[in-house]
Image (cartoon, rainbow over all chains, first blue to last red; front, side, top):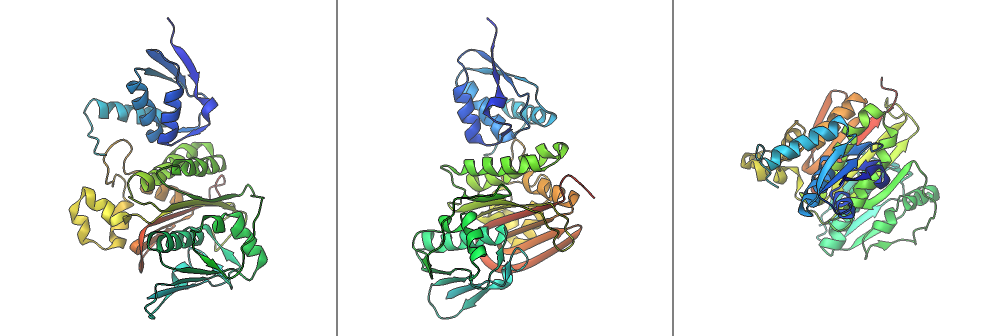
Length: 91
Length: 284
């Protein structure tokens, strides 16, 4: 079954807070894999992405990111490093 | 001991520290005298709100406010929601005006707190983003968001405020349009925050701790994108010929185009971060 796709632009062009990450993660369609398309999103901060990923994973959803900027990609790579233990999270 | 904050005509980030005097009469009264004020910038408003809220709300001390004689200045403060955000119990010498119009070049004052303060960060970033060239937008907005998040999640503050303003006039060699943002809180301050990660910081003065916090990678919370907020904002202030001013505890550091001024200032819990970018979009 193809993964659901969500246009993140509909939530705003500037996505920066953990609260927005939690809110959007909670609104994602149920399913194992959801494609999240960031076309039209100008800024997504590391805090926002962290919360989006963590809450989605806790809800059993794996995210596939599309059309992300270099800054978003960098933040997601750092999140991967944290989860794999290559970087330690203190707080 | 009572405190008198007596505003000059122009109460801004450069004149604010000279406006406060401490009167040795052993009362706990704070008097904010704005009668002579014809202009107050958002640095002054955020700092005044932080001080008055700290004293009236947290300490239960009396606060008296004398409104500006200038009607247009009083209206301007009302448009910034200054009076609306003052804590309960503040005594006014006359009733502040109510306004219904909020011009687009102003981002009115908002309170930061753990319950709904993140909305204030969203508003600040949404105000900033369209005013910057696209190639600078992502880095600066993320840095501003990180500074706001630090107030909510790491400063241990229950009192914090943000505001933004765009000025269309040059000022003291700084080219318009100028974008000014301020984030302030009454939390533990930069020195105490850095001490969490490095106990030796406790030996430093506040102004020395601020200088360390401006270095890339300095953080009390290692993790994703940590230690980028202040140092990134500093880079942007430099790139745009602007001004970065940080006040924390008993210290203040101001940077402007390579000039760094570190000062001792009257103690105030928490931190005020003020950044002004000049002529965004037409870099010199």
